[in-house]
Amino acid sequence: MNVTPPFGTQIKHHGKSHIVQFSAVETRSGQPTLAIEMTTTMNAWGKKNTIKMHLVPETELLALCIFLHPKNRLNSKSEFKTTRAQNRPKVLTIKVNDSNASTYFVGLADNNDKLLYNRVLGTQQLLSLRLIAFSRLASLYGCNVTDVMNMLEHYLN
Image 1 (tube, rainbow, N blue to C red):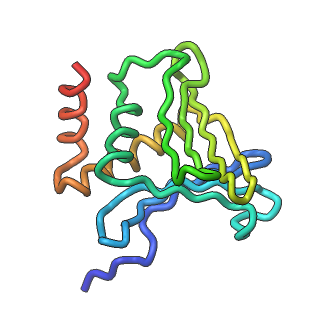
Image 2 (image 1 turned 30 degrees about the vertical axis):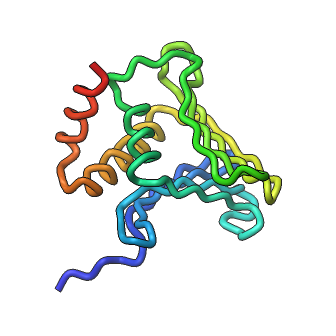
Image 3 (image 1 turned 90 degrees about the vertical axis):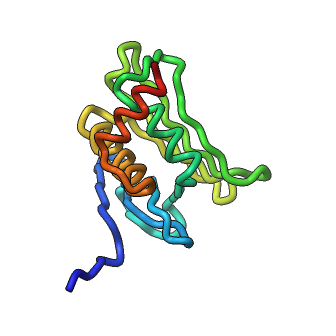
């Protein structure tokens, strides 16, 4: 008998002052998506110092995968940004950190709790974000990651 664990894949990257986590989660209606969470290393995962953003599968997860696709031609001004609520919003920003797009910057802000976390994503962190994002999108559409990569590459051309 196969038992599904209560949580999907969770990939944590520890920095000097912040931890970023990419998680395979499901929406309330059972659709696969991605959650990005950030917290401090001092009081990790405390309720008052953690920001979590679940991406809307059909729009935001798809847009993130298009942004992260290796064939997407990005420059130093390229960014992915999504916002929750209009009054004192929660904001997720992922943008290119350098001129050759080898590192990215991720930032999460929760204006209700006045929290702002950010860190640079290096090669390993970026690879884990790409892998989990593409696998969640493939799961959403019932196909494999190769199909997702090929379709997005066709879209980008």
